[in-house]
Length: 466
Image (cartoon, rainbow, N blue to C red):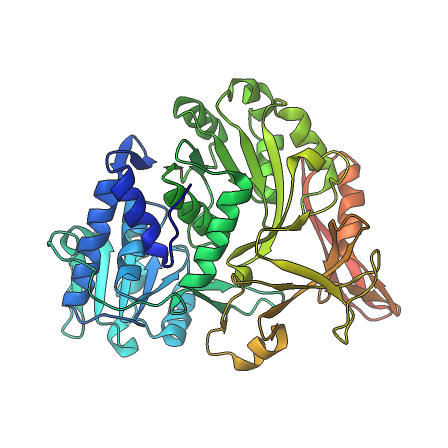
């Protein structure tokens, strides 16, 4: 039973008090205890305070999954700052746009971003502190302070003494959205804490759990893996080399991993381009796998169930960045007869299927899925119109078309903005994708609408053959 937490960094502090010497993180042979992780987070918080950062200050994280990421994330939250996690693979123009939109006071970056940052006038974006992990070149600037990450955690500072409220903004996560325009999803401490506790509850995550992490922390599902396992006092095994799946599977066996999480492409890769079918029987400690991040075709779901030993539970999950990660899950006990469903709402969340006018539709009828709960975002960063379109009070219009069956199980049938209109008829590309998967020849596919002079639009499929 976990102690109640009201702020995200309370998860780390409580686990550090309860399990001080237990490994919180394992990466490439290095084991970091909860005591060490919390100490580093405190020191990082103290460094930011010494440089004038406090509540509301945005801090951009351009880091791969690592100890430095976790300590920086929890450290900045301790002083009420706002984490802005982003991919370290962003290009120069993307980083410029990011800095212009969020106006961060500090940037924490890995060596792979260093050269790009040297070509950007960070001072013009009012960045006050740049913290580099394993810098490869010498830096100097009279407009902002430059520190190595080691320097940022060398002091004895602390993040205590500053007032942080559950409703305060904690994180801005960027999502491409249906139209491809990045939207900054604003999540409060309350949002993430509520969702974290709900996920821990339905997955029954405890201190004995060891999670293999191949999803990035700048992605909402990856961030939820970090928070749920830190909340429970579990252990995270960080592996940034999923391109070598055999090595990942061997590490899962060596570390006695109990949980694995992936998106559809993760499982497509494991089933088609890895030794999973041959090695699955050796995953004796693995108790469950979770899948979210989009539609996993039935053909892959069936193959995944066949490939994994019967003791390994499979959780199909559904959510959105706007929901702090999770909205619904399918219990493993119903995997066989409700395989095409995303299940029912998670604890604390209410899901309704509504007509365009907002009224709830009868069971079995397709409408838009609307979610309410304490995990729903505050809105989009500097985008009141975008916020107004999807938020009605605490109700979030997901944009997903769905129906609810007689038992209350939810079936997603497509996106409002992804339907393709051909000759006046609206078609759902997801249905076509499922038929293509059934051929047995494809590892992955996506069906898109392209302009057509005669029909207005026509369908095109991008495929990856087995």
